[in-house]
Structures are given as structure tokens and as C-alpha cells.
Amino acid sequence: MHDIAAIALALFLVVVGTSHFVFPAYFRTLVPAWFPWAGPAVAGSGVAEIVVGVVLVVPGGRAAGGWAAAALITAYLASHLDALRHARPDRPRLLDRPIGVAARLVVNAAYIGWAVMVALTAP
Image (cartoon, rainbow, N blue to C red; front, top):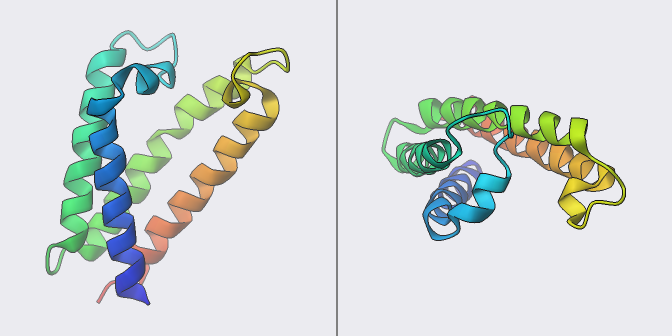
């Protein structure tokens, strides 16, 4: 079961990281307006997700990959908390409304828990 969780996390990170390059405009909408380098942030986080995904499947890299994934995903809390600060019920996108931002925070916490579990159960 631990192998499945680690491989699934690796696959998830590689797919999402690749998506940063396929759909950069969407990911730029997640970067807080106060952050001046949205484009490089999207590209950098995409590369980081791909690299961490690969580390998770490298023999002996699972614990480091799990902790790196947890740290990377935790860094995204800045985006979600900024979105919460600006959330309003009349926003056109569900993810920009209070309920949508709350869902983003819950899902983000679950991803962090997944990554920590992979790190803690690494051989």
C-alpha cells in the first residue's frame, strides 16, 4: 500500500507539474497579485513538482521526495490564503468564492498529509 501511495503521489506531481506548461494561464491566476513574477513562479513550481515526482520513484529517494512534496505543497498555502482574503460570493469562478477557497484549503491540507504519510512510511 505504501508503494501505491508513493507512486500515485509521484504520478500526480509529474502530471500537475507538466500541466503548468500546458495551461500556464490558469496557473498564473493562482499566483497572488502582489507577487511580481507570476510567469517564472508557475514555470519554477512546475519544474519543482516534476523533479519531486521523479525523486519519489528513485530508489532511496522516497523519504526525501515525500518531505520535499510536503514542503512544496505547503508553500502553495500562500496562494490559497491570499485567495481567501479576496474571496467574495459574487465572484464568477467557484474557486474564487469563499466555499471554493475553503475547498482549496482542505484539499491542499489533504495533499500535505499524503506527502507526509509517504515520507514517514518510506523504507
